Image (cartoon, rainbow, N blue to C red; front, side, top):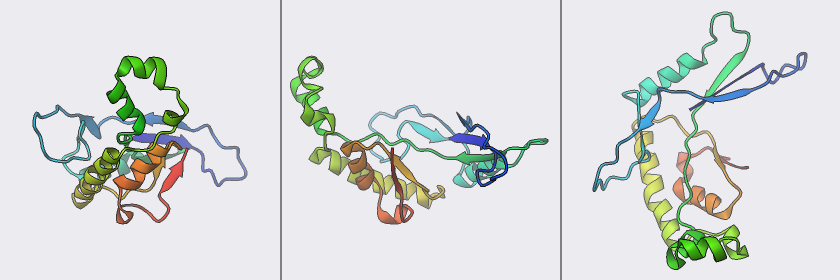
Length: 175
C-alpha cells in the first residue's frame, strides 16, 4: 500500500510540489505459513488486515480525504508485488548447484534475460488466474495496472498470471 502527495499535476500556474511515496500500515500483515496447505492463495505470505475488502476500501477512502489545513492532494494506490515464476536461470542454479552457478554461469548471456521454464509457465497459469479471481469474487478492488520489469521472465509471468477479464484494457507498464 503506498500513498503519494503533491500538488495537482494539471495546474499550469504553479510548479509541481515534490511527490513522496510511503508505505501505509494496517492493510496487510505477515501470515504464518500453514504446513501442508493445499489451497492456492494470492496472498501466500500476507493476509488482509481489515475483515473484508469492503472495509479495506473504506479505510482507503479515509486516507484519501484531505486532512484539516492540508493544501496538497493525496492519492493512495494499492501495489501488489508478484515475483517471477521459475526461469531458465533458476533451473540452471538447481541443476548445477549454487557454487558453480555463482562462480561460472550466472553472468553468461543466455541467463541474463532468461525465459520461463515450462514449469514456470505452468506455475503462473495454475496459481495466478484462480487466486486473483477468488480475491476479486471476495470484493478485491479491480486491478488498475500491472507494472513489470523489462526482463522476459517478468513479462511472461505477468502475461500468464492474469486473465484478460481480470485487467484493464491496457494493463501493462514496463519499467
